[in-house]
Image 1 (cartoon, rainbow, N blue to C red):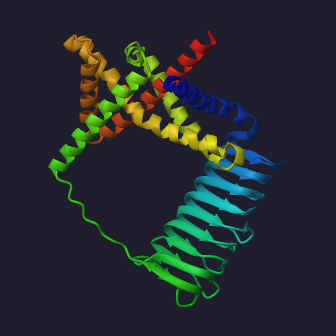
Image 2: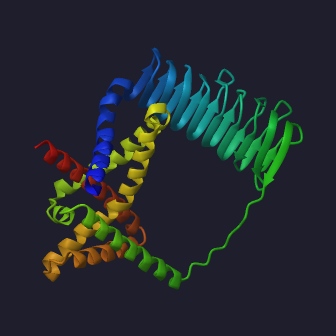
Image 3: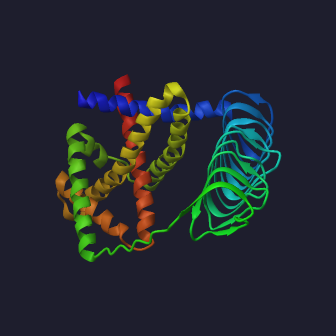
Length: 357
């Protein structure tokens, strides 16, 4: 029963990931310089070096690029780029980038969530404003709700009007606070926490995580019969390994996007939550699977032993010690995760093929 349930879940995740590219082909524009026009009522994904969106979309718009300019109406707009200029209208707006400008022609009827380096807002905000970044200028605008500004510098003037509460860090440099009209103010005090992490603590955490990983893999081998044999039989030539890593990278890019889309649609929300949980599990398992492959190779060719447990211990120990090496450790962590996710995908494909046959 457990095996059937896990197989069903894995198939759902795979189908969710595979169907996205087909769906995106119908709803996505991409290229070097993209100019988007038209009327839409759906999910729209646009990507390019320079993107200019004049489209009106009564749905969700996901726009990414180096230089982004949005002039149309987007009910829910998610914009991410180096230079982002928002001239359009939207209910809830999510902006991320280096230099972000919301022009005086823009309309944000509800909430605005903004993260960036230099942020200038010249349009009113219908409800709450939440910002994280280096510098923000909110001179001359009205914020009808609360303003939470996690920035190093805040600029306002006598025409700045915050109906609700202004919250900012005590270390922030605030210009024009005495001139602005603010309902109430809350200053957040930064707590400095000094954590002393001794070698004894590090060694303890290392051993505990190693034991937890070992037990997890043993349970996995028990639930999924012959999974250790499949890991031992994977193709280890450079091309096959690069392909697995490429698949892992693609999944890490595509599946989170699918989850976000699903969470914004009522009937797909449960599937989005399940997929998010399974993606988290896969990210945890991926390095462990890669470690077992490494341990099997060492055990087979150097120690010349066929013990699954010995291969697992060797692999986990070698990979985890390698991750402790400065600079190189981070690179190894990324590679083992990508390769492991590729292995999971490969296992799912093989399981589906067997069921069809």
